Amino acid sequence: MGRLIDKPRLMEKLKSFHDYVRKNNGEIGTKQRGIDLNFNNACNLTCKYCFTNSPIGDHAKETLDLDMVASIADQADDLGIFEFDLQGGELLLRPNLLFQVLEAIKPERFYLYLTTNGFFLDKKMARRLADANVGRVSVSVDSFDEKTHDEIRGRKESWRRAMDALKNVQEVGIDPYLNITVGHYNAFSEDIEMLCKYSEDNNYTTLLNVAVPSGMWLKLEKMTEVIVDEDDKARLIELRKRHKNILRNIWNPFDKNYEGVLGCNTVNRLYITPIGDVLVCPYVHVKIGNVYEQSLKEIRDYGFSIRHFSDHSSSCLAGENKDFIKKYMSFKDQSIFNPALAKDIFTKDDYIEKSNLVK
Image 1: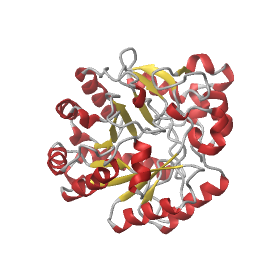
Image 2 (image 1 turned 30 degrees about the horizontal axis):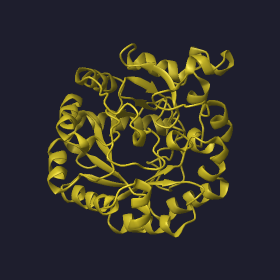
Image 3 (image 1 turned 30 degrees about the vertical axis):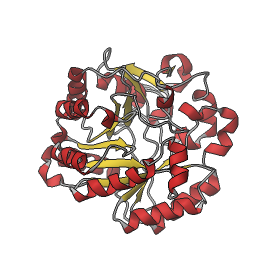
Image 4 (image 1 turned 90 degrees about the vertical axis):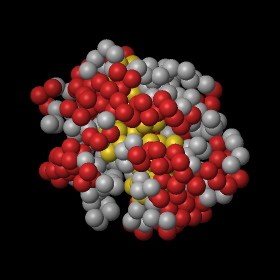
């Protein structure tokens, strides 16, 4: 995690998270870890599987108020949240605004990172990000083959620039993460193996995200083509054991045997849209509040009052649980800007008594 010693508040929160997980049998329980903030949804690429619908220009002009960004960060810090992921869209389209957002967040309190397609991340931008206290940059790569990646992303040179971006941030001391989306369609492909090897050989961290039927992929009839099956999941575990630099958010990063599972991160990692809606995660488009209407604590408490999100799940609800997907992620035109409302889709039996909440 880069220069932790320079961030005492971050170290304090990370230790609290580690101690909680250790005492909770290696499970994440109801301990929050992160904020995924989609500050602006505009993008320069047209990725075929975009979960935010950026390629169709969905809410591309809206941005969160900077004062609200500062408030979100302050509230997150008070709640012990240690990770802050800035997403889009592509936030490097408007770099001056991005650096205003970074200043508002006060990144010295967080393990702050930027998720990007890397298209605009040259050496100069990498240095600016490092100077702004960005600890990690996650660059999404869809294939080790340049042509395949560019076809998926809808723009030539996107592969080359993504690969260059990883090198550029590594050179300035930022943690380079190579993000790979894995689904039934590619879990056993040579492509995945080559990307994992390339990442390990270059001392990057590989972050695996399982494919989910949401956004541009919101087609229930194609669910079996998209989401991983049992054989695919076994393949991911095998990759984890063989390549020690591979992570998934549901895996326990503290387990030196590379076997532990934290559990699904819904509500543990809140997703906030440019209009302030708060979803239980980036891929489960279910709204549990709005930052302009409730505090983060109120939103968190409501989210964890729903048993699907407070009960331990060893698999990703959005990308592995077919029953959950069919019941709660398959509404017509459901998206990050047209989410299902938790209060409408969950029944009394879906809620738990506050006294039974895991602390």
